[in-house]
Length: 264
Ligand code: HEM
Image (tube, rainbow, N blue to C red):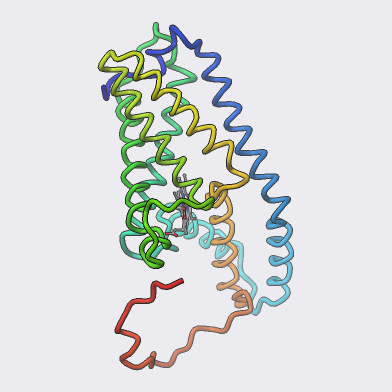
């Protein structure tokens, strides 16, 4: 199973050009929905107004080399290791889901565009990475869904309670889950069941990429911008108009240790 490219297996019934058109429509949907979301939330406008205001409030000039090192640090730490999530399960689960999805999307793209014809042999590393990416997404996504979601871990709601904000994580994990089940049944030669899971896989992708305007999908574009802006404002002293951290020792009394802060 790990060594089969499920897209080339179905190429005799679904021409590769249809699969490629589907991928292009999904990519266009993400771009258009993100632009519409930005226009609706006015977050790009806010970002540039804020940038101008923090430039005026800056206390130090940041040299070009310092700016470059801040950008490198933001990419290496805030973005690639999602350091905003601190140390712990939340960050590990997020990294699994994030890298799993990136691997799954890139390998899906390559298998559909370059190896979906049955006459071309797909390299083993691609098919293995495709399955591994889906598995990592499931691990990170279900970990988050069952145990780490604020609604479940802090607010005491049941994991089965679904609200609109869950659209992103749910469509992300179901797409990967259905992909793995589809691949398994296709490998086992059970054509009817595998077709059913292929349809579910396609539908969950339509919800994932078609629902960007209503879901949290676009956070993966917004968060890096916000992290860069925060790091630059700390360096130039404007600090988003927040006070400098105190140099005095923390004195909150013993009460603060009774329970960790997790009520939002
Ligand atoms: C392929 C890229 C990414 C994927 C698939 C992904 C996936 C997810 C998922 C499934 C969630 C949970 C959403 C929910 O609350 O329902 C989430 C939350 C979050 N993501 Fe991402 N993400 C990606 C990129 C990023 C990047 C680049 C950053 C930061 C620079 C980031 C920072 C965050 C933060 C801070 C949260 C909130 C976490 C929490 O509430 O525990 N993500 N992400």
